Structure formats: structure tokens, C-alpha cells
Length: 492
View 1 (tube, one colour):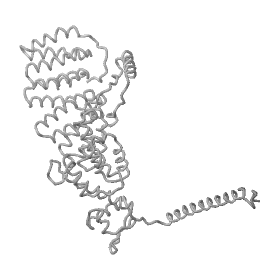
View 2 (cartoon, one colour):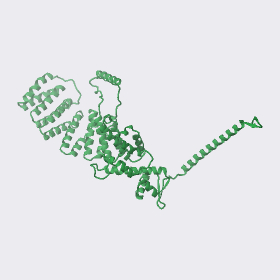
View 3 (tube, rainbow, N blue to C red):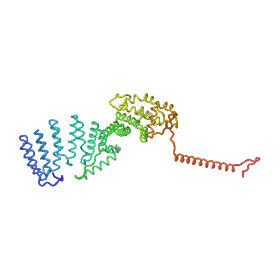
């Protein structure tokens, strides 16, 4: 096979091709063998003369004659034979593969279609100049396997290709291909592989582009038109602004699925926020309101840390929360240092929350097996919030009073305090004999010395201030007039 470089043909067979190819196709209707012999002899002449246009027409004519005759096995043989010819032009092979791909929909049955696909996969294996065609053929094979119910085989076939390395494939098609790979991995339960594949997609591709005014659009269109006029045949195609909203929603839907399966609530919240930052979602109330709710739910469910707390307060400031008032009210309770009684929370918000697909008060109420686990986690977050509030206002508290504030028994109280201490969210020590919980963090020598130094500095500042006030009063008394025996005099 040639190295792909296009040379000037030694002889132009275009006129001969205009006559011979239609005659051969007409002859094929009466006798396929004679037509193939005639076309094969002409293909050798055009190939040896490096006439790309005529060679491509001849290859297409050969496979078309086999297809029109309904001899699919001969078609497969000819494709394999022609692709292995010495000095075969790469561009001609690419054209032949593309034409045979268009024949797949005309195959009489699935077995015939599979045989043609396997032939094309054999021809395109290891050849960079037909890597895009190989990817498309492989995707069709995977879809057939999936339709037959063999999802595992479909995933293995599709995931064997590393399309992110294909330089000739457009970015949109690459992204769509990888999303299909991730979707199949999720369907067969291979979540680790799905997470690895999803990292191949750069999220900057989905970034929302700012709206442009009419003047900017006109200027860009003018610049693009000038580049189009000055562009040579060897230059790469001009980039086109694409609407990737469908790909963005598919990507984040998959990321949300993976995050929910692994109970990564903070990641799920971030992904929902990305969905929220989509024009199609903002303009559609049926998509906007559920997305707003889920942003709030998963922000609340995420374990407490600095990032979660910051995100929670930023979500609370979103003015669109007014469209989901009950959820916004629940969110507000987590942003203020006040106690929440779980029985009251469950009574006030429980029916509304369990009406969604996120929470279930009882096991087995919905198809989502983890919905009840999220309800349990919500109760846990309420209790942890209450413990943090108590730790903020108390240094020492009786165990009985603490259990009353938390609406728990002593065992559960100790359990939640221990978990928060282990996570270094609060500091606490439990004196079981005295039944006292201490939230006062002991200070080491450096902290004590620094505190003493700060207090001494403050004390000296106050003394200096007092001395200044005393001196000022003395000076004022010296210059004020004093009455002596009815006469006004100045104190000396």
C-alpha cells in the first residue's frame, strides 16, 4: 500500500473510466464474473499509474456490482483482496470502505451485516487513515450486540478503541463516542471503568459561552468570511461553534448516576449545579425546579467540612430558590446556628421530601434502593448540625440535658459525638461517671502563653488610655476659670 502521499498520476484514466465503469456495471447485471474481471484489469492500470480518482471509482464500482448482485460473500472477498493490493492508494481504500459502510443498511439479515462489519474491521485494523471509519463500524457492531441483549460483549467491543487519540475525528463525535462507552459500562455495572473513561472528557468543552451582541456577531462573521476566502486546500477546516447542550446534559447525567451510586453527595451537588448552569434548563421550568431541589438536597446530605459549608451558603444566596420555598426553608435551617428537632423536621418536610425520587422514609417504597439510606443520612446531618450548635454555645453540659436537646438516647448521643470527634469537626470529652460532656478544647503551653500575652497587651493599652485621660483632665482643670470671692481668676 502506498504511503498516502498524493502524486501526480502518470496517466489520466478519467475518460476511460467514464466509458468503462458504466459498461461494467451494466455487464454485471448479466454476468458478474465478467464484469469483475474487466474492472480488476482496469483497477490494476489505474493503481499502477497512481490515478487516485479513477482508482477510487473502480473500487467503488467493484463493490457496488457485488452488492447489486446480492453476493455479499463475494463482496467481502473483494474488499479484503482490493485492500491488500500492492501499492494500493490509501485514499482509494478509504473511499471503498466508506461506500461499503453505506451498504450495511441494505444487508438482508443480521448475519450478513455482521459478516460485512467483521470484514471492514479486518481491513481497517491498525490503519490510521481509516481510524474514524473503524470507530464508526465498531460502534454499529456494539449496537447490534446490545440489541441482541449481550451488553457485556457490546461494552468490550466499544471500549477497545481509544478515540481520544484519533486526530482526524471531530471533537463532538469523540465526546459522543466516549459517552456511549461510559453508558455501556454503567449498564453492565462496571462503575470503575465508567469513571476512568469519563475523565477523558474535558469539561471546558461544555463551558457556557457568554452571549454576544449583534455587533460582535457581525464582526466575527466578517472575520470568518475573510479566513474562508484566504484558506488554502491544505489548511485545516475552520472551527465551528457547536451547540453541545445535549452532550453536556448526557455527561452530567452520567456523573450524577456514578456519584449517587457511590454516595458522593458533594460531587452530585456540583454536577447538578453544572446542569443548572445550562440555558436549556434555565428556560424550562419542568427541568429547572427538580434541578434546584436536588442541588439543595445533595448539598445538605454531603458530610460537613469547609467546602460543604461554603457551598451550602452560596446555594442559599441563589435567588432562584424562591421558586422552591419549602426546600429553601430547609436549606436555611442548616445555615443558621440554631437547633433543629428531628421529629419536627420529619413532620414538616418529610411528606414533601419523600414525594421525590431522592428520599424514602421506609425501605422498598421506590425503585431506588438507596433512597431510604439518604433519608437516614438526612437525619444524621440534622443531628450533627445540632451537635455543632451545642458545641458552639456550651463548654460543659450534662448528658441528660444534651440527649434532651438532640432528641436521642445516651448511646446514640455518644455515637454521634464520637463520629464528629473522629472527623475533627468538634472537640469533645465525655466523663461517664459524672455524666458530663465537655466541649472546651484544652490549650497547650504555647496557646496559654499567647493568650496571656494578648491579655497583657490589652491591659497595658487600657492603662495607657487611662493615663492619657487623667492627664487631659488635669490640664483642663488648670486652664478653666475659677471664681474667688466673686471675682474671676485663673488657676496658676
